[in-house]
Image (cartoon, rainbow over the protein chains, first blue to last red):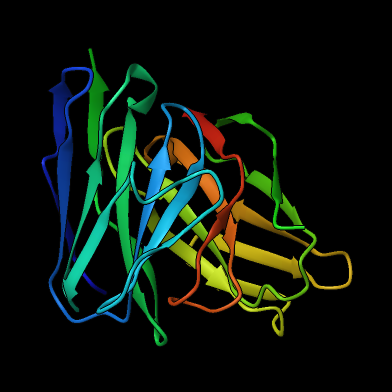
Length: 113
Length: 113
């Protein structure tokens, strides 16, 4: 199964700033996804990162707030823009192929002061 | 129709006992049903998964039972161990690996010696 690495593992940021989270997969994958997990809660999909085209966002999430890049088949970034305390959460990257279920990284724990 | 309902929210089991977590779904287009195990500070790890054409799948102490007509599936952990103490999420997707996962709300399992 694919091994997924996320950086940073955690960060504390000031209100109004932006943070870019990186997700690296050790093999080429068809699909990459970004999820958010509030502490003690379940996972909610933010968007699907499409290689070579714009990301597909779920209802309630917009590109201006969560811009996503996917320059190749092993790497993606999620930026959390103009952060507020409500953005304090765990952000998780996952990856999968048609012959391989989704696997997750260990997440980025983000706190906004 | 996109929801996956999970119960119980928390579960306390004695070592050696059986842990049972239940999930239900509405969308008949779902074609793959994974279970993820999450330890504190870690990302969800795929535990076991099933497709709707199979009624049961067993891997070691973990068994999924699937009832297609009732649109329900459950995870059974036999001979539960303290090391099994974690949060368990059921999920559903239309396509293994390449479509978004819809997660249940999670079950926090505590196994006492």
